[in-house]
Length: 137
Image 1 (tube, rainbow, N blue to C red):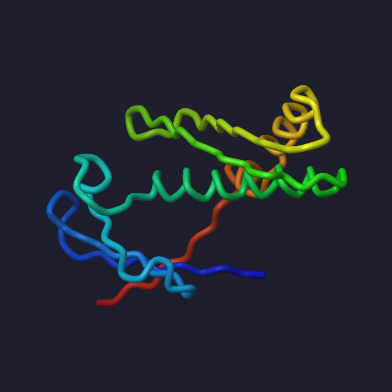
Image 2: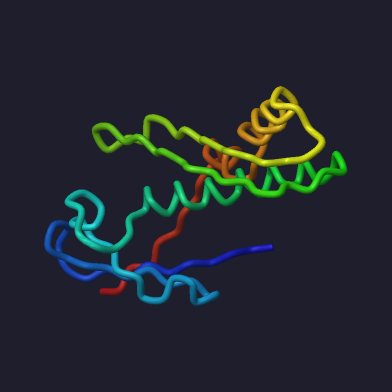
């Protein structure tokens, strides 16, 4: 499986603007800029999208692990806090609340700790990244 996304940018860093688009259409020319990233202007930013991706992945990983135990969650709600200092992501905290019949609080914590380490996004955060460039003269 391969997934794609597109980013378009025009202008300098502080006054320029960009858009993000995904083939699914969920992001369709969605605004992002220096101001949406650092000054609170309406729009998204890479860190918000990373936190969102991690929340979804982690929650699905918890659900998968519960399902493998024969359990169906009634509800799972995750909040992710991504901390950035000096232009470096310094931490991601996952906070999940779950309502699941047939499991104890300790068992739920064990499942969530496993998902914390093994969800696809958690593992990807230490994955090698490659790039290529094409220059238009």
